[in-house]
Length: 406
Ligand code: SAJ
Image 1 (tube, rainbow, N blue to C red):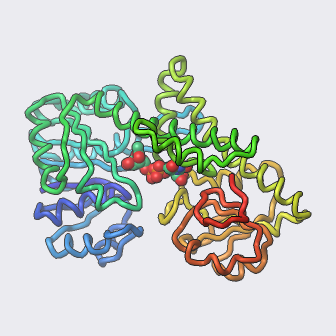
Image 2 (spheres, protein in one colour; image 1 turned 90 degrees about the horizontal axis):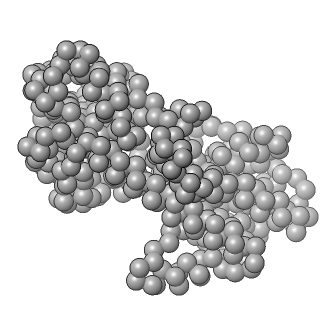
Image 3 (cartoon, rainbow, N blue to C red; image 1 turned 45 degrees about the horizontal axis):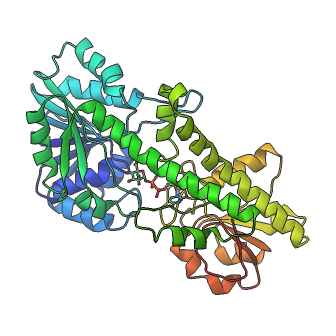
């Protein structure tokens, strides 16, 4: 039996995939409300294909509990927040999950950490903790790191089709865990050592952050000198060895905007490029604010309450607002005591910020300048409602001739 610890964005779909493919799975989370909800057949977040997968897994007997189970295979997928001040990883949830596992696990158990951790975390925090409890690693328990790679919005497809990495001290044990993941993962699974697995995960997200920073810097250059950044990126990407990502109002989410900081925090003297990329991406909400100010001036709009931000989530078609560019932008406005900008997101129905609307038509009717911060499908379907609005399309998704761009 596999005991999956932590039933959030990663743990839940992973547990469901194992169960769907016939393995006995118990999902454990300390959040009783979450367990009650899942036990009643109610999902806690939306994701393409998750509902169907959930029903299949329930039919296959997946169980949910607040208790850690006595077994020999654990997958830990608890959050690893980062400490804002030091920019370092906060390992306390992984450590506490590990301690609870050690209290119940069978001898020779596999303890697989899926949560993203900064390079060196297992050596620095996890191994000493296991040893302090009197266990011999490699004999009493086996530690592994199997970082996830799935992208919100396409998680279920990617769980099956993305290649994976298994970090292990011992090749044989690594191969055993590779066999386990092969139950649902059809792509290559690379077995490597633990530090390489930790590092490669953070490197992947850092690579994307740097690439987006390049696109954002290009957007600023092009905007300053009246060139079309989208046209230029499109043409450059036709070169067989060029693949520039898209500029946008900032980089949010719990991965790309966070993981590069682990490298900066641990290697401050060696991370000039990574740090600069972070600064460029973090500067984008301010760049959007400048664009808003210039457009307001050009159209004689003096009242900020005539401006509406569309989108609160960190990217399109997900309901996750962590570190979102819109929240970053509102924070900047707050610092300048500029209140009253209106906000709407079709996927966020609970109230998370001031001046937030839940009715799209009402939101639109009260504003003159619409700032598209997120490219949800919803807005593409509603272009007709916005005909008389001035539009700043920071995601370049509306294909309107007269809209302003980043
Ligand atoms: N963004 C841009 N321009 C782009 C692409 C993205 O501005 O061309 C922005 C998005 O709008 C968003 C942010 O970047 O604010 C991050 O979004 P994302 O779609 O690039 O990535 P995440 O954070 O949803 O998921 C990433 C993925 N990592 C990589 O692609 C290397 C995913 O595979 C990881 O599993 C995930 O991080 C994670 O959990 O680490």
